[in-house]
Length: 202
Image (cartoon, rainbow, N blue to C red; front, side):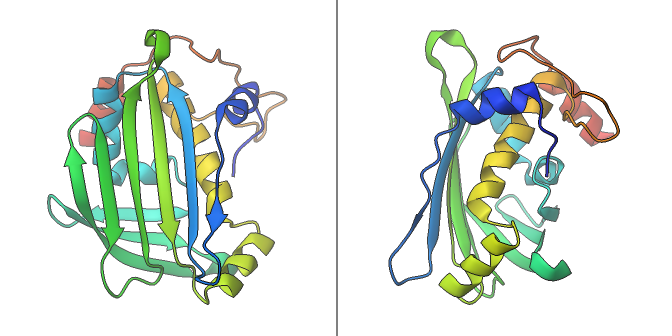
């Protein structure tokens, strides 16, 4: 899902990974966090437009906004299949916090939340993501997904690394077809998110 770069290694060391399977329920929960060298309001603005997320979440094929609180999601699943669901925002605190949940009829019932808190020492913003989902087939479906390398907790970690790369450097580093990936400092030059968002509006 991503090339192994120096930035990836640094980000991986800073990620706090605490997934847990609720015993006997088939529900998977995971919490991830990462520090990004951007202001909370900029990160909130990028995330709040859910149609931006397929750029950093490779398992998400598309997101279509229905109205101010609802959106339709299509995701890649193991075996070349796709799953779909409608999602609604359940809590929205500008520049601070967004929570959501899937609506009845979802192929994969899920919910989650993301918070944007100033990092210590003025070094950007800590993004913390909490996810909960019930995979098809319960625990058996989760085990199958992990076997094929599609474990959502692993995906979340990779997605956060890609998000950091895009929002700090303006692009996602890759080693595909290259002898080495782009090297970037943990708190390197700040890239204007306004420029990135303006491109999406053209």
